Length: 356
Image (cartoon, rainbow, N blue to C red):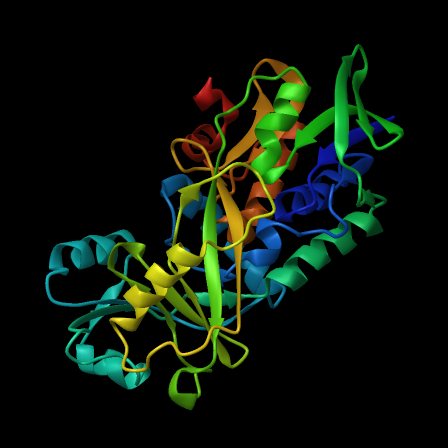
């Protein structure tokens, strides 16, 4: 019998495996052929400390040292752009993201394809960083395995049974036993909870679509910041000499292997085109991922009030990569009976108890 059985091999589950392996034996079950197949493998991969509600921002800041110390971050910058009629929304976004205003001319100099008559306002955060999401995920997996964790793919869970000693989880033809069950199943966390006899938390998977475009006008996009339109109605990010553009959609959908909606993608690309001089003439690739939320937009981390042997590591939303180090530490602190590094208010704002 294992001490911890984790269901889900995205960044939530893999980082939890690395942290919980310090406390005891760990097995992780992932239903797909590889780790990080769903939301974690389709992330825009940015680290922006001020992105999210206060509890998320606290996790971001508590994760920063891990990201910097392991070399996962590289310079990018983040720039908000707006035009005539968007003054109120621009001011709100600028305040929420703690950006400093810059002249529109500076924005145009940084990103030469911006349309001068449309981009009349801009604000910047120089310290926003690119995040090496794949290496982060693989390093957590390597750390977990080095500490004895067993990570198994192609293990779709079929049944969960509560026992006097803990849990029996059937995946394929194998029954796994553990004292503590950790639900890190992303968009499927409520389905796993119901199988375990635990009340769901009201998870809402939301689709986020992305298109990869050739560099606009053949420009060198390497030094461009990430761009966002007012109200997060679109964003664009340089990636390996190309430009990723998203409509920033957040349409509720059922848990699935997500794919981009052509109409939603076209509408988002049109909003992006309004702000630039170069039309979109070719989409090289497109995809979508599911960002999973609960009603208040914060992560759900900790022990289920109705069963002390069931832990949630859920509702990462769009923040899972940048919050993973601190989220995993918090989970291990709570599972190990240690005082969390985070303040009490933040721990309470992340606790499953707030949803009960």
